[in-house]
Image 1: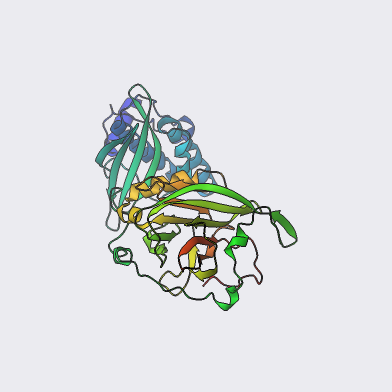
Image 2: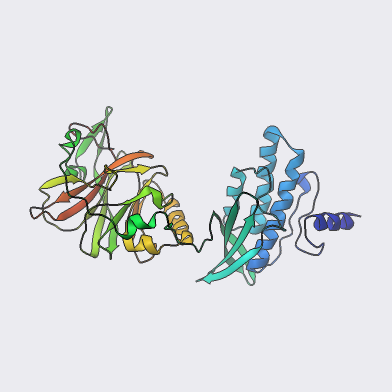
Amino acid sequence: MLRRLVALVGSFLGMSANSHAAQINPSDDVYTIEDRTLQPDARVRAFIADYQRAHSLLSTSNGSDKFDRWDRLVEKLDQAHFIDHAGRELAGVIHGKSPHTVADEPIIGVSRADDRVFVETRTEDAHLTKFFEYELLQVDAGNWKIVRLREFLQSADAPFMTERERPRFAQPQLHPLRPLPVEEANFDGEKLFAEGKTVAVDGKSSSIQLREVGSLNVSSGTLVVGDLGYDPGVLSPVGQRVPPGHYPVEVALAFERNAALRIRFSEHPVVRWHPADMGDGGHGIGVDAGDVAIMDLTALMALKLRDKERAFESYGRGRSPKATMLSLVETNDTTIADSGWGDGRYPVYWGIDADGKPVMLVVDFLVVPHAPRQTSAN
């Protein structure tokens, strides 16, 4: 009788009774998932079927019990199909309609990179098309499990740079250097990197520490800055050029946070500071994902959605305050750091030598006060 019930439920969900199947019961206490050795595409199909079944069990729950029950169901999905508890992220959202269904999520691509296999699927309804990328790793002979599950509104192989934004980056404008605004006239980026200097904020003191991050690979001569957690609409080219090359990157730390980020282009002394204009009348970076990245324009124009997401995930797994190099397209073509106190708007400056050439680019995370302290970041 139970086998017949499973067959009927499997038929309703678009599956055969002999396929990989979770046992259906109104109580998730006896909801089990058979642990089988599966190839990448079969693992993805099994996960989709089991997710759909787990989601169907929520219909009898409501209120706080619904969230507790979903958490228990996700735990079983995680144990069966994922590595290193990566599936636990699914517990954070309860969907009204299951986003993964056997009938409506076909596999549209399978690719391999090094020791990983990537399976891409697509879902469509009257309002929205979504793409899911499953990253899988072999855990033992013939058995693959999911390392990451990513969601896109375009194919993961699509370019990160949208057609709408491309003209703004394809021919980035030069912006003449202008004087610092009155309220920032005393800005001195060198003081942000004065190692060992004691600074005080709200009655608390800290000493500035320097940390070498790496060497930025600049092939285009144009740098782009912004929050890498979003689309290219929040990124901007800075309006000066630098010679192609490899340039040292440093962060200054204070109060256990990143206080400033800089790239040094020469050892010449800085004689003047200027706003790093970005074409919108200002020199501030809007941050909503807690990070600031500086990257080579060439990398940005060639970047694919999946590669951007993978790189940003690797940055996110570090310990705060984070500051590291990323390889979006070429080795070390991007540097990224936690942005001081988090979301906000942070000013960017050029340090210029006596010949008018850039010595350094500095992002001030407004952790260390100036004299006078800035009141706006434009």
